[in-house]
Length: 255
Image 1 (cartoon, rainbow, N blue to C red):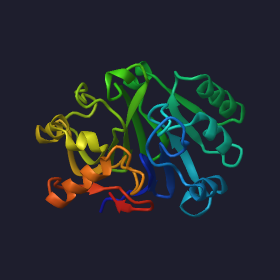
Image 2: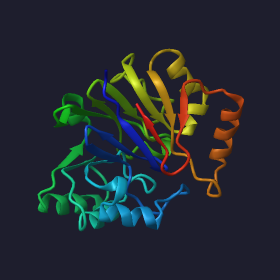
Image 3: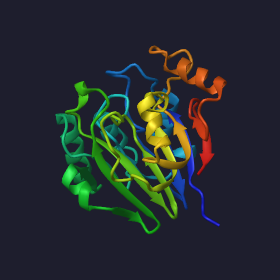
Image 4: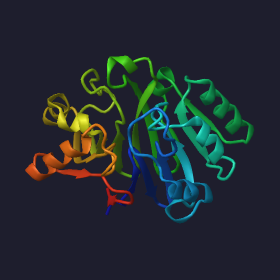
C-alpha cells in the first residue's frame, strides 16, 4: 500500500505537506502588502514562529515566486529569528529584500536553493530519502508579469506525485516537464480551473491527475475580485469532476 501525503490548507496558495514525518511549507510566509487576497492571520503567524501545533518541525520552505500573496522575503527573514528550516527553495533573481534574505539564511548556515532556468533543467533535489523536488520555470499569468521569475514544483513523496502550479500562465505553457505524467494531485488556481484553456490541459491529457485541487481562493468576506463566488457556482453546478476545493483554513486531505 502506498503511503499517503497529508496536505493542509492555510490560506491563499499556502499549503503544508507532511510525508513520513517531514513537513514542507509552500508559499506560506507572506504579508498583506501589494495584493487583494486573504492573508495569514496573526494567530497563524504567531504559531508559525513558535512552531506550534501543525507548524511544529517544518523543515523545508518552498516559494514559487516573489509576489506579495505568495512570498515576503522580509517576513521569512523574521521567521528565521525563531525557526531554522533545513533549506529554503526560492527564485535566485528578485528584489533587494530577496538578496538580503539569501545572505541572512546562508550566514545562519541554512542552505538556499536558488532556482533559475538552467539549474531546474538538469537538477532533481532530494532533501530526504523518499522525497524528490523538481522545479521548472514558467511564465506568470498575465503578460504584465512575465518578467517575474515563476516556478512550478513537482514533488515526489514516495510514489506520490504532486504538482503545484501557483500562478502559471496556463495559456502559454505546454507543461513539457510533466506532460502526460501520471500525477496524483495537481494544485491549480481558480482561473486555470475555470477557463477553457485550463480545462483543455486536463481534457487533452497534458495534465493527467487523479485529483485536481483548486486553491488560491479568498476567504468569505474577503473576496474583492469575486473569485470565490465563481468557484461556489461551479461547485453547485457540479462542473468540476474529481476536484477538491481548498477554501477554508485548516482543510486537509490525504493524497
